[in-house]
Image 1 (cartoon, rainbow, N blue to C red):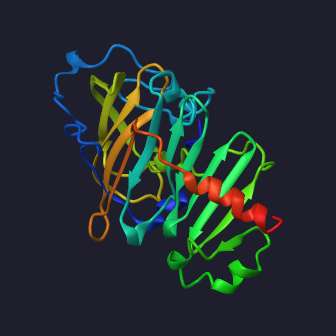
Image 2 (cartoon, rainbow, N blue to C red):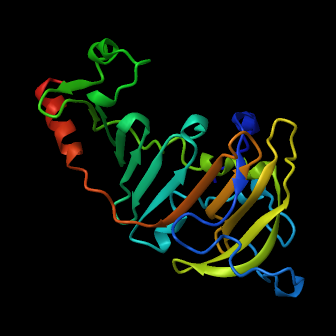
Image 3 (cartoon, rainbow, N blue to C red):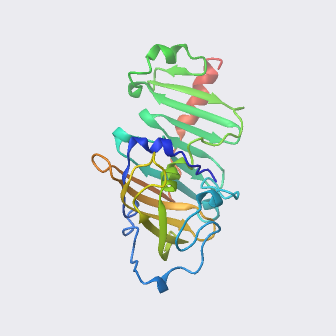
Length: 264
């Protein structure tokens, strides 16, 4: 899987882990300190008192693929403080067609389906550090006056996965975890964990205030976490993988038409 430790990124400072994001009860749920109630089944690489994220990563199950066995379409969603952003992108996956849409920073979106790639950037959302003339001079993009946006469309892009999928969970690897119970989340059996030590295992990490995560029993996928780090403002980071309707994407056809009309 794609959750490789990038501890240096944590230097931005993260501070707390608490309940899950998508309206479920607190991620620690109805947990108890009675160790007799601990789960009896764990994914390979995890146990009652630890999670070896490298071992979880060692198989072919990834968050881009494993949930397709359970849901027709789903989303990988996260939240983080705007001033402490770590990872770009929320993702939507159609389990039947394999289509992937990414919601990116500054209002941009991209689309992948087989070898096809499309991208749209609303002109009024372009940040100041990306001058408009750079977009005008980039041969990969075409401006459409009717929608006031820049488009790219490439039917021969190749089967390249979104590079940031899986990176959202990197920050979890800096800490120690202990199991507190088992629950079913959107039809999937998961083990709930909480921080067993708020101090990070690496000097480059940031101490945590609190944190929980939910780990798939069968596939070892992190399906949710809620973390608050002990930094200024106690920044909170949340993450959830859940069933979600695949978004409308008429803009992909617009991208094809606009770029085709301009000889792209």
